[in-house]
Length: 290
Image 1 (cartoon, rainbow, N blue to C red):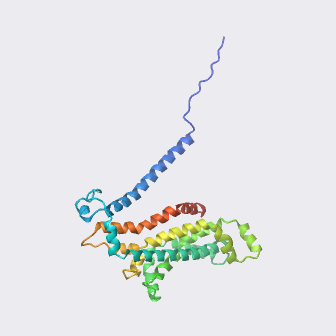
Image 2 (cartoon, rainbow, N blue to C red):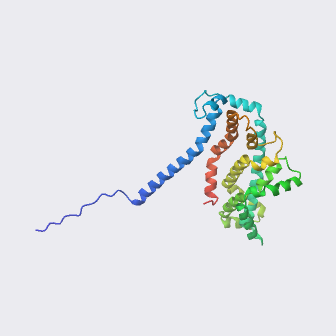
Image 3 (spheres, rainbow, N blue to C red):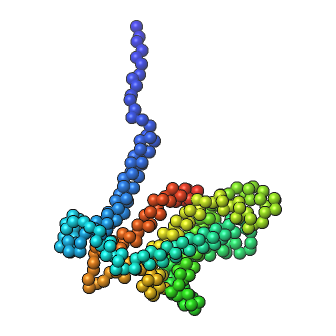
């Protein structure tokens, strides 16, 4: 009599693709945690140092709890330095830069996306070349230009250079290219001019792109250091980064006051990012930056 035995089933640990995806997610989580620590450790160190006294920092610089914590450095920095004027200057310059950059770069991106003219390819090449040109190479020509225009020492000397932003032009161009062409053709058939198509059809749709450009322009304008250092020559007309650099004295460095001023300087940027982080992610995801 012949007996037939069924083949034994071997247990499998799951599909290899699922294991690979899980391992990749864990690796991404570890990398994100490391990058977060790299950014948070200097911020935490600056915050703790600003709460200590100069004597305890000099005696025990690596002990964060030596000497106790107090807000004396913040009150001293606010009372003895024109931080309020620096805040106002940085805010006005950053807001003006955002308004003009969004307006002009959106119009440039719209023209490159939908209008057809002879030098369109040349203009696109010039915009792409602007991405590869370092900003430091433009300092001397810009200084000579704005000196001849008698704009040195004014807000316009800081606002106008930030308007010509090739990255912002490409962000708007990428978003406008994603708008369906039949929508634009329908507006044109109904008799809408190009300006009306831009203002009433395209701009309400590209709010994520506007948010992304506005936030990135605000942050870059707020953190700008070299150009404001050369243009603004009066103490009360300086911006936050330039003013903070002037607090560092080689003969007598007041570490707590300097750190307190630094914390006051970058707190607005943290607030802007925490409030508009969803708009940043949505704008990057929908403007073609891939």
